[in-house]
Length: 487
Image (cartoon, one colour):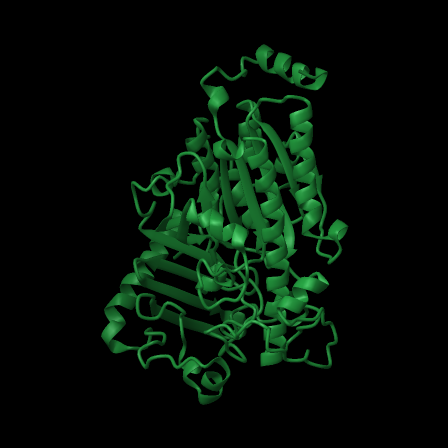
């Protein structure tokens, strides 16, 4: 045992926090968080996708895929900021620690009950690597080892391999020091967030180029990903923040929604995502070689989804399924194998869930629900109603509510004269097709012919009662969660 581990052991003994023999059997945790990835990018969720992620596919085969995991929402154009605060604290979106002045009903000592602080006190070795910024800095400081840097380049030392190397270094050091504590590793990648600079090899696989010329569309290539099924050349109305950076100022995209730009941008997204898959494979291989993989809970998710042409949008500032929903794959001890379930979970449920799976007491400050019963296959979902918010532009902004197959989205921005309502039956219209998707030029571009009933049903008199029911449920959830714009 090294002097460093010995010192930690003495410290834990003095605090009465040394794990018992039973606690030494606690599982390791590898929490992997991608930056800006729609679940619809992955073949696990979308068989039409050409993205190759064999490591994640294998992880899904030996674990659980949740079909409806969401990030709850944001009061900021930087959607990742409240999302990452929710992951760290288990708090709901309107009850977070100070994020650009937004704080409501949050314990003053919340940093002591964040993910790294809770697990470090429980005797875990804690390590983090992720992008810089747009996260809860006070919580990040609670990790025992931390290597944060924004790595979005194409070179190995300036992209996703850099983050994987930090984890591999940690595992090697752990082995050298004979550190037998269970570990909590937070592996956050900086990709596939734009600039989406892919490696030459992977860009070639997806027929894409690292294109930044504002004046010209990139060339079409047969290997580029197909257009999304719900592609539109423009959204039919202002979503309350149509001038947000992601919609007008991403280099190489700007305001363009032409077929060539969208397909090229998806190709870049896929190139970055496949590289992430390769890096996850390296980490899992090291864990397998060391004999620790069998006792490691592995969770793959993202801070939120992304549009890239879906519904005529490019960013993350909306509440369609491709953006509100996140990928969620889990495998390891206590988790069923080869299972798919609705889930109905939020990212903020991670703290309670990881505590529950590890035998660590769940902090009273956590508002999340443990999804253990879903992950072990004894339940299909954790909750009946799901609420979402985007209020980063004009207020009050966008709200959504899902119950069963029914989903409501509202858009309100008096300063922009916006007052729109959408109602979807996701059983018959899972892609949230709009009337605009039935235009001949859109059908010609996508090759998809929506059925006549695959539209928003908000204006259909036959569904007026369902609409009013969903509006009432939404306002009730807004009141319950402390939404400042609840009636």
